Length: 356
Image 1: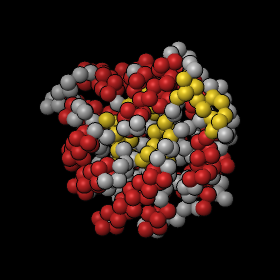
Image 2: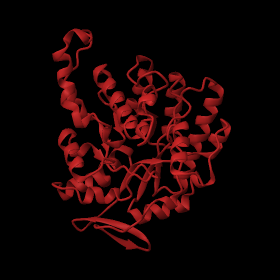
Image 3: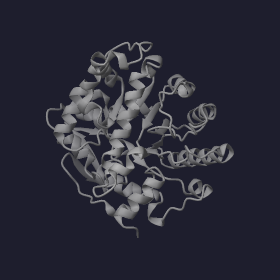
Image 4: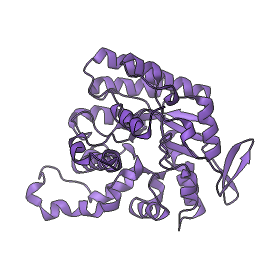
């Protein structure tokens, strides 16, 4: 079995998509739930809440094999064991996603086949367990014309609920106009795009050393950069109906967002006069969704104050053991009403993902 350091190194090589062994997680029943044949039921104010995790990783072994990437046995998707862990943690449904590791692959035919395999296998997993799983499609965003077709097929034919798009596409930001047709299709379909970072390789030399800084700092920074470009390049103005959810509470952006409102006021000569945003940068945060994977109840309270509680959805980052009590993180956070807790735990995600 790989050490934790080896595992993180392997994960970086595949943009953070590999699975850890389920045995790494520490499971415990916590407040707010009661067992039902081994399945924890989450109850808020006497009402059974269907919890939905929007941030759950997986891999498809057949797809990894296609591109010569081997996955150790303990990292494979094993539905039965995953369901057991979900039951113990009080997670009723997961929205499965695969972090893109194919964006720098220049073999269009191979990438086309890779995406086909992944999306069809994801659809099979969901079809076998429709009350436990939905999934985000994979897209070959390095080929935007192809990605448009893949998204439409994934949603209309395979029943997938959106797409997991990473944090950038090679050296290109999501705000690049070449991706506009993809965002237009996502807006037309009304589906959610899930942004999950893969670090900032340009900073890896500075982030080397103890502390796994390329992840701890690099991942939130990657998300912060991606969202900031979407805001400042006017992408959200161009596509006002675009639904985006950012992992890890949106990185650093919500925590220091007010600085964004002052950048072009302080240095107007360094901003593009041809881009005229329709509102203050911080106001765009209220149309972005954020998962709850931030640490501490006060951090969650601050995120809600900055973006609005109805923009927050439950996220666990399964199977990475950052936090194995994600449900309790919401249940025990200060100041929220019962209705707000219910919304974060699953009601908002159900609406976003079209879960009846």
